[in-house]
Image 1 (tube, rainbow, N blue to C red):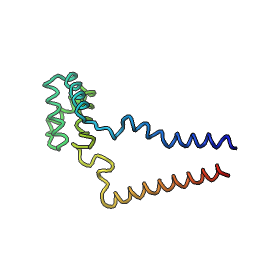
Image 2 (spheres, rainbow, N blue to C red):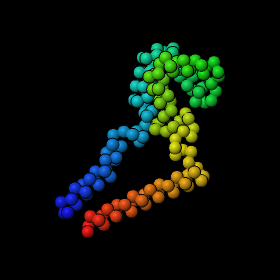
Image 3 (cartoon, rainbow, N blue to C red):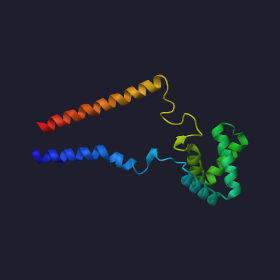
Image 4 (tube, rainbow, N blue to C red):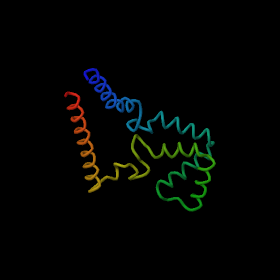
Length: 146
């Protein structure tokens, strides 16, 4: 049983710290609209669309996120998004994330809309899962020690 204790301990350590290693190289902690990233994405969008079409799509996207898009503009944006889906996706992502925050679409983040009772329930759910994790870890350690 002693040889399994080290293996289980190593496996538990890897499982607990692997997500930290992944997040160290990207993930939601990295701002999506840092100056270099935004410039690169805008350049790629402009190369794919051309200057005039890029400007047109950007104006339409700004109106879309502001809730001021007319029916004709909606049809035009839908056509552009269908014809140039890659550039449209990049632009939507760039405009949606600004300095690591959801800038253009208010309330789009799971946590940004957690106010009032929803925030309390979300915090309670987090605490319950942390408690379950600690209890399972204690049970595992108890079984390993025996």
